[in-house]
Image 1 (spheres, helix red, strand yellow):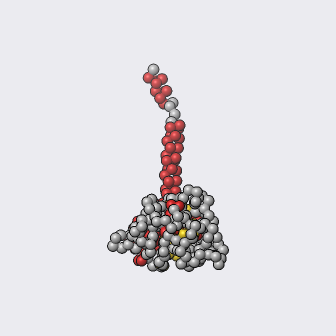
Image 2 (cartoon, rainbow, N blue to C red):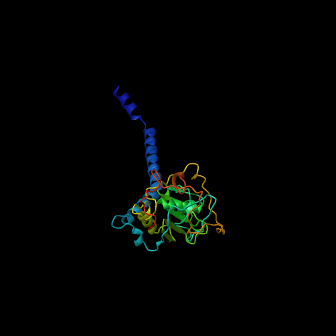
Image 3 (cartoon, rainbow, N blue to C red):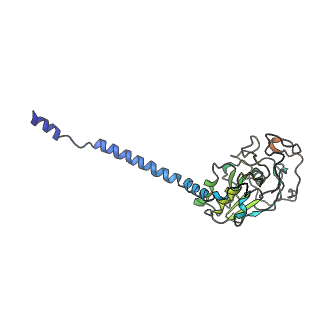
Length: 272
């Protein structure tokens, strides 16, 4: 009997099924980890860039830290001047970063627009405290475009779009501020965003204004297209006072005073 039992034990084989299952689980776990590391790398790199730019966040003692950023150009513009969807503005800058604009703002809730959007709508979003990252689609593609996209996608008060004919690869706009750079790795991009996006210190006219889509007036999935043609003689000048039939904020008449929940308090500054 003892000999028989010994013979049965000695004939037990290696548990290959168990070994294969364990190896498969380990391989699957490793592939999941590798996939996560690869997919999350752009976001982790962006988190590092934002941490490096944190010292440019606005404070009461330094309301506009963008003044420390080399290359930033500023101008003073009057806010709340609206034109109709059929009208154009003869802007003084390319891309513009202030001046008369469409009565409806472009959605600026972390939107990455795949095609160029009507300029007059984009400028209105700047009035609400958004940062607009524009890029030359002939110069910015692939990894460089991905680096810009991760700065905008899902970030409140931020929008990214191509801008055909742009004289530099990348141009950042906030109301009254502009920075043009050559490289998506430029640290000044994140410094500009940290200093000016939703800055609460009156560097744009309508503090606290919405960046949400305006139902029935602006569809972020099908926005009004960019017009590359030079504005004609009927374009509104930079000192324009606003179209009579244009609506004000929240669809109010242009001449009506803003009130809650309008996009800006009456006491909000209108110039830098």
